[in-house]
Image (cartoon, rainbow, N blue to C red; front, side, top):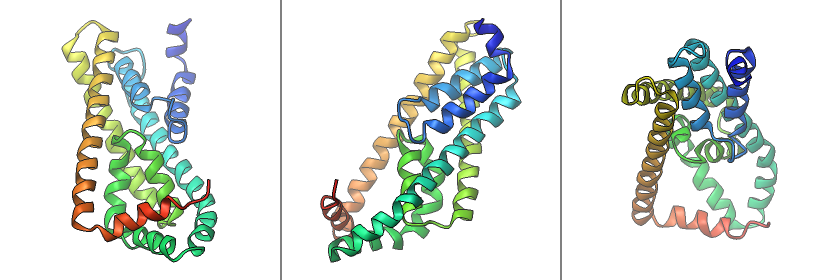
Length: 212
């Protein structure tokens, strides 16, 4: 039954839906789904071109979903910010930097655990231009899908003839890369915070005042 499902169009629908849903539902593992589907495609169980497109489409749709949820929350954020000068400065600090960090962060966010959610929501809240967001998110989705294909090839090369061992290896590699990117990003944020204490500290102080 599993074999017949893997060979059906519904398998590609599950890939798209799972990766899309992971933007807001953390338990849905986007990297695991992507690499597993890529491994199946490399083994000839699925169509590799359709899997690559499905992974990129799911990633892009997830970005769009998170962005629009952020836009829905932006009105509440504005109300929250106007009730305090400190909060207003914190939001201004984020908005002033959206042009510099926006494009790179939108494309790279998917390589960090929870990054799609955080970046998409933040971009929506500060009302990052929607057309630019869609363009950068689309480019990032294509890069992410190609990256998953490369990892699946590595897993398959390390364990030729053993589909699931190769898939598990690919998933482990993807998770290790995500963790590495997360740790590097955290180190850089701490370094930036020590050089510019007023901006980030104001943002953190203000966020602590946000009503639950």
